Every structure is written in C-alpha cells, then in structure tokens.
Length: 167
Image 1: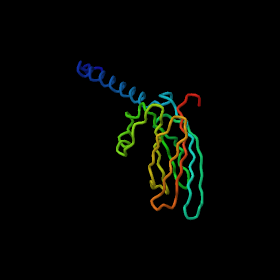
Image 2: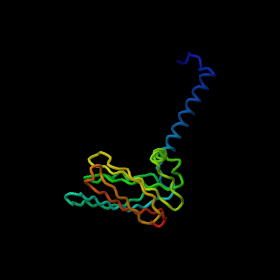
Image 3: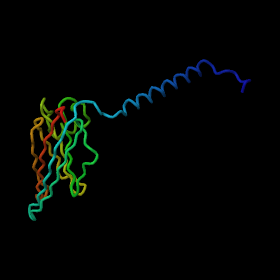
Image 4: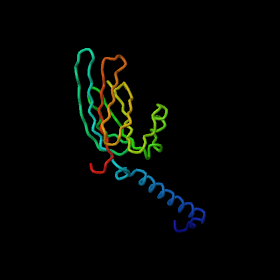
C-alpha cells in the first residue's frame, strides 16, 4: 500500500464534500427531531364525555384532563367502549399545520384571537362515528352534542380549554 500513489485532488475534494454533507444531514435530522416542548403556549383541556343509549337509557360517562401544545393529542386518549379525541388548535400557527387543509375542506373557520378550535373525533369499535368541532372561547366551557347514524346513542362532549400560562 505504501507503493500506491496518493489520491488525486478530485478524490480528496469528493471525500471532504461527502463528510460535510453527511454531517449537515445528521445535524438537520437531530434538529428536526427535537420535541416541541417550549414551542408556543400549552393548552389545558378538561373534557367530559357522556354517551346515552336512547332505547335502554344506559349512560357511559368519562372525564379526562390533559395539557398539550396546539395541534397535539396525548397518546393515551383511547377510552373503551368508544374513543373520544379532541385536538385543540390556537389561531397562530394553525394555517401552517398539516391538518389545516383538511379542516378547511370540512368548512371549519380559522379561530380568531382568544378562541381555541377543538377538532374532535368519536369512534365506536374503531369506526369513526362523527367528527364534530367547536370554536371555544379561551377558558370558557363549550359543548358538542351529536348522535350516531342509527340515532341509538347520543354523544355529549363538554370541553373547557385554556391556553393561560398559570396551569
């Protein structure tokens, strides 16, 4: 190997460019993979769900509270026998969200300052029953009421979302 000629200038430059490119892409991947902690205000959501069967009058009720950033949902939001999820969105930054195009297609308006858009999904046995949304005044209660396709169950979701810093 000592008798071989040294690599040429073009090969050395290619090696340097390759190392710089790999370093830059690894740095970008580390930066892009950072958690959103500390990016924008967090939203405290109090959610109470009540499901009433219209024939048997059975009632299923559940309550939860979670603290998330705009556009986020905690990983543990599945509640048997149905799943109820509500994702809060603040006005600033929503237009940049990947979910905004789907919301616009559903006819949802951009929330004005002082409001929080609560985009909810109701599932029964894994199937989506309804996707209601409500524009809630920051810190004030809001209610969504809907039924399933057969009108056998009435779903009532009471929400109170607040982006106040004193959580």
